[in-house]
Length: 480
Image 1 (cartoon, rainbow, N blue to C red):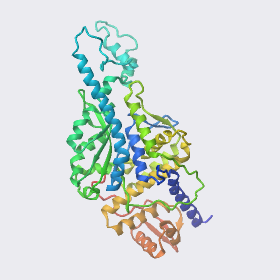
Image 2 (cartoon, rainbow, N blue to C red; image 1 turned 135 degrees about the vertical axis):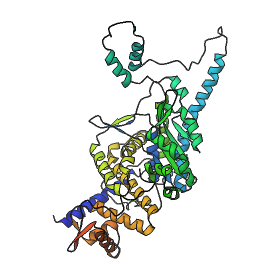
Image 3 (cartoon, helix red, strand yellow; image 1 turned 180 degrees about the horizontal axis):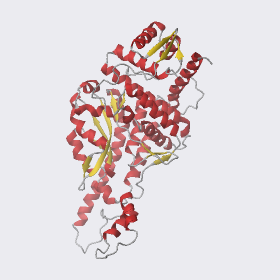
Image 4 (cartoon, one colour; image 1 turned 60 degrees about the vertical axis):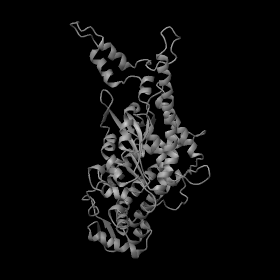
């Protein structure tokens, strides 16, 4: 097989991977295809809302976390996410807060009863059975300090103390019932952090003005890093963010270089419109097309189950799926490394995106009365994740450069990514970019001038280690 034929086959294989996004074509009740961005927002909301420690466990027992901070840009997408994601999640959280409020009122009333009255019906201070770590800790604390010899097993007991947390109880839930927080200002957000459940919350805020990015910056960055000490003992608190941008202020905010806007680069951007590559036309791929009805109802049911899992002290435990997608994760990290030139820091920002999508979409699938085989669409989820990163890169380029330069830069990056091995001709590039030779050839000549391509007669070849000029020198607030 000659290099050209090999390259054509590889290009088609890449195109089929993109087409696998269609395997995730889900339908709403009215029969209209669900927005890919809205589907992603639902899946990541479920992952971010899950009990701390949730994730996907590989056969070698490595646990991949499923958190991903998210920014949804544009009025239409922000409104859809508000209606389809924030509102149902907020409803379940409000129900919990209402129950806690009623309980505290009743507890206060019964505290005021005379001792001779009937036994109290509520006792929020009652604890459940202690964990092994608690039992060992209490045992260590009650040792007779006057003993000269240290009893056997003390060192092993301390290992259990530091490894096994106390079992959750009703008091913990009543004192810290917030798994979800919505805030309109940094002050409002800070005021609610004291009640975060299990030290981690799913947090949503909105950017209505470009200045909001600076106002939220310091607090949001600390929450993402898990460096916000709260509580009487200074326990650290972590926030998983969903930031909506109804005013479409992202371009203006991103250009305001400064320490207060660097946190924007730590978010996955969900963008629409002309921001990046579109899905390829739907064509038969031989894969199994997965269709789900009542996606909103399934999502609501999945949120309900996650809240019940977190709030019930007898069942509070991480949600862990055991799946063998090690090769998928390896490919995913290699892909992120390739995208570093276009999105500095993306290999850290989106490290858990693929796992989070797998987790969230599986929760939606399992909410069905007759769940389908989820393994059929894992490759489609990988293609979807790549698609999101490429659109984010295009959105970033559109902010940094003119529309023409941004489009040209995207084409160049696509050539370097998809035609990196072997030689190729002009027609291979035309097929890849879906543009006529009159447009493609000047792009190739420009890449040759920049040192990214080398000409071999009538064929081209990518220079090993080539990167687009200025890729590493762009010092913008979008960098990590």
